[in-house]
Image (tube, rainbow, N blue to C red; front, side):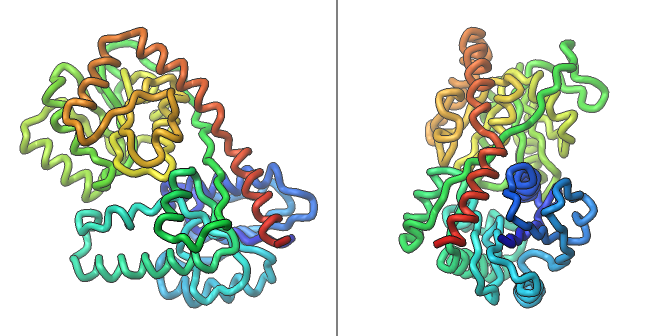
Length: 372
């Protein structure tokens, strides 16, 4: 079978989608059958990053930016040229002109639930046009896909609520977590010259989009002035806005660490007293699993897919209850038995999320899709 994968998000350029796409290709190389041939479509900026390790995998230059007319007009004809039996689009931006069988991964429906102007730096008219285009693209992708892959039961229910016509075409393939915890971290009062963060601290890793609910750290920092709250994420408009809010409130115990590479991030996870994930909506939620892999107790909002993905290995709080998060932080800070139990449960729990399982489910889905 000839399978194409739209890997233009591959690697860091695609952020979370890039990680998913990179792991998908990496593990498909390990589980692919001898009769399968894969064509991996990449952009110039990530073309050299992918080096096939399996002779059945061939990379193809498809330098068409995401969400553009070039993508819509030219990518379909490039795909047609390779006479593919199936194409996997790891995101909803499926060209309208592509009319052969395809599988699409829908990770979440965040913009259907948080379609506010606060989610963008663009002016309102531009944003509304983009939002309309998003709706058209995702409805078209879900309607035309032979199979829809998704990453949690929560997202499957969400898709069926919004798009009942998708019933019978959804397959769940949980993501994996192979984050490597670093055992060599400082146990002193600071974490070294790169960060210099005082202990104890609670950690957050991710972006600052409004649905991430990072405003919850403001009253929390006021309530626990003896504790530091470290927010890791690439600096952008949304982090700038949060920094301004923190400065106006006169808060001095929230640290903005900016982007931190994985080899340093492992140390930050392990040295943290706890990890806080206050997000109001997640289709999966990889950072708290990475914290669990590192043995860090996890506190998470009881929203979206998080109860499903984190199970009984996390401490949950109600974002609508102003005291709920603070009580969880208090418990992790002052109950060492609870913190130890969360650490133990987290390490065991995360072992059930394997990229190889995801790749095997995805490959089986390709074959089932073509045979029906």
